[in-house]
Amino acid sequence: MINVVSPNNTRLTLVRKLSDKKYRDRYGLFVAEGEKLVKDAFRHGLKAEFVLCSRAYAEKREAGEQSFLSAPCFVADDRIFGELCDTVTNQGVLAVVRREKKELSSPEGKCLLLDGLQDPANVGAVLRTAAASGYDDVYLCGCADTFSAKSLRAGMSAQYVLNIFEGEREKILDLLSCCQLVCADMSGENVFTADIAEKHALVLGSEGGGVSSAARMRCEKTVSIPMKNNMESLNVAVSAGILMYLMGKNNF
Image (tube, rainbow, N blue to C red):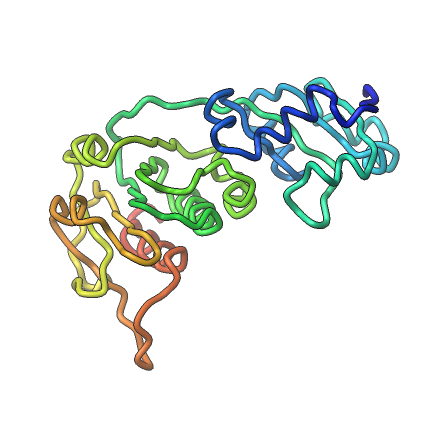
């Protein structure tokens, strides 16, 4: 491990820049913060530019426990390291990881389209459930960045295993014409009894405005989740979980 003394070190400067989506897109890099996200990145074969540890983290762990750090590793003062982190109580380790940008392509099976989700925590939570329920292809248009710190934390490494595609709404909708497009909306038919094709694209809209009119016009079917006690809506991540498990139940 190499000590980093100056707060103006080029690697520390890069970590700071990567808190901004503009630089994540420009460099094709993101910051995985915390032991799980760092370990999982290596486990799934992602390439890290470098790993950065706090001094406390480095001192507490023996060399054998750091064997997962298969990239150049640097150590920073605890205070400097803490200033780089998005969390209040950090775990003492982060990695700058290269993101594989995927070209838009048609899905092989059922898939998910996120249309205008703006809350990064919701985006991450939906991705986590998509990975767990077998929706391996996820398309996004006008959404919060899937590789922001909040999205990564909520995704719990889902970003590492999913095929994530971003693009213009019309291009994505054209690609998904091979699927039955199913829109989630309160006015739709009961999802528990709806007839859903095995190869479908579940379309989820923004937290406030719902599915865009452009996407809604392309959907063949609209489904809803029945609710008791005059509840009018559910959080989009909760709705996504219910819908994906019900609509993809033939996979289990």
